[in-house]
Length: 147
Image: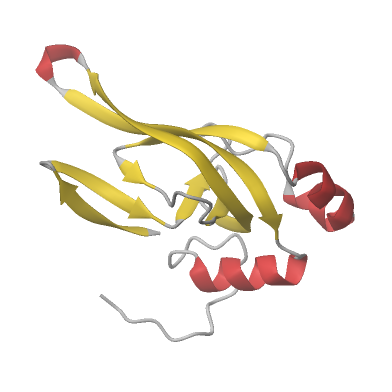
């Protein structure tokens, strides 16, 4: 979840959440069904996991050992809050496409520093996912400011 600023004429999305699909860099072997079966084994296997990510557009994630949420975006666009990551590095790139147009992306690496227990995972997923995007079908119980 983030907001957008303009820095040196470029729009940059400020994020406290690394929401990525498997294509964008979410760990391929980290999945909800195996986590439900043996959460401790899965957590022990993935704590300290280092991965890389690529997101479209310019983004800024927390630095200097400030954790960000790790969210899996599945094939249906549903969000599942897994835990926290530390962003080790991030680079914003401008790419030239054909006919003089440009695209931008942000690439980086992260390490998984925390994996939530199943109860925390469900509460955070239901409460913090964008409306209609929660992995779980439950509705948020907290009150939200509607923009």
